[in-house]
Image (spheres, rainbow over the protein chains, first blue to last red):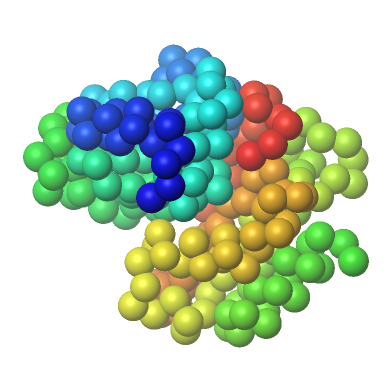
Length: 113
Length: 106
């Protein structure tokens, strides 16, 4: 890990919240189709999550890419673990793996399935 | 060389895919005509056998490191083994629509 000062803040956010979505815009007003797609998947699963808008802070916007070794936004964390970006999380949602991942991590979902 | 061709060549050389699609989706976004900013990749290769999705994507990010840094704004991809590709019936997910935010870089 590098000593990038923003890493401490990111670590705190992913430790303190079961499900964290680093995204462009907010869950109510996503600013990017890829971010909106993940908000929709999490909402359909009925998962409570914390959305963090990287557009509000250039150091976070760059820092999260280095923190996760992942060059794009959005990024999903569950229980402190990086799950993936838009494509991976959508695939997992469609296959049912995302719901399983939440359940296995003790994260409440409201989906009937 | 066009960015699309560069992507095709680099992926083909590194992963020897059984199936490869490099789709320029820039026209779906608010960029000038002829732009090469938004791409979708479909990569089917034995090289992904036994590797997690996150690691597969990271491999591709590594191969396209220079293009991601300098040229590409958004890169969507589906990474499959030949068995997974067959199981999906060779179908690819549609890409999300652009909402216009954060246009200037990734």
